[in-house]
Length: 405
Ligand SMILES: *Cc1c(COP(=O)(O)O)cnc(C)c1O
Image (cartoon, rainbow, N blue to C red):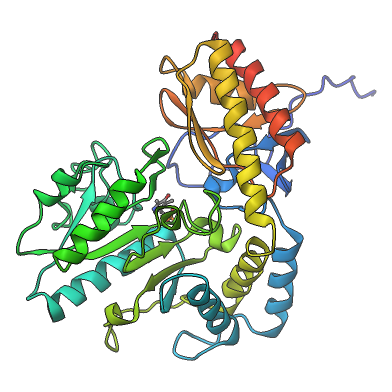
């Protein structure tokens, strides 16, 4: 018996059915990444302007991070958070040196770092503000997906999701100082915000607003907490986005970029605010040397001479290119800072553009749509000019494919 000629069937890829469903995902499995490029199980390549949600600040599998992880994995992975380890101590020292903060608590995700900031503020309020616990946060803000950080977030609908909420997070309007002042009461202990609202659609805080907020919180004896999980570690062209406004907050959280792709986050605070007592804060994996080694590799790279200048330059190229595309196709303009940028579309067509970009052939493009009428771009911070140009060409093709412009 002869074997019949087989018609090639599309490779179904690995079986993913045992994974818990949390969201619709495209029918592909990524198997490899390098720099700004990802490869799926069929061998198709994608130019990646999502980078694990702004996580891979040095692109996919940066050799400097891979080496740091491999070296550290052979020395010490986790002695337990009850003991000091060298990489965590060095990374904390380095972060304190390059910021206006004195001490660091390491966490495993942005949400966890923000939970830590909330706990620290509540503890400080108990000790120094007669039990004040309310933290003023902002409409459309995003601080994570734990119960407290969802409550702190101002995403429409999240106040009913998983109700009851954690109380104590009144919402002010972004870039509106009066709306903050109106919420301050005897129970207020802090104001917490993103220097650029990322998930809300890359909406920057005006420098004047941040400065006025710093003055106001100082006058009223409140803490100013900046959530730099998305904006920190060079994303906006300065090491931390709040530095662009020339302010010194009391507390800052980092996540995403600080680990270069691995789970690392941090809570930083000025000395006077650090008031945790034994047992208040901790976690099995917090400050483990393996992730800290990755953080050291990332920070060393981002702080190398010229790195942030290049981020600013690439950001300007990307911004100009998006503005030009918007003009030519009659779209709604672009905004952002450094390499955190957005293109505003005239209709709620962003999900269709994301799909069209990903399915371009022979190579796809990955972009993200945090809002139905808005595309977000958060490429590797060390991407090349040709990669920016290439993205713009592919994006135009995708926009035209869905009738944008
Ligand atoms: C992504 C993000 C978080 C949550 O970080 P996770 O690591 O996903 O928990 C918090 N705040 C901001 C501003 C973010 O962009």
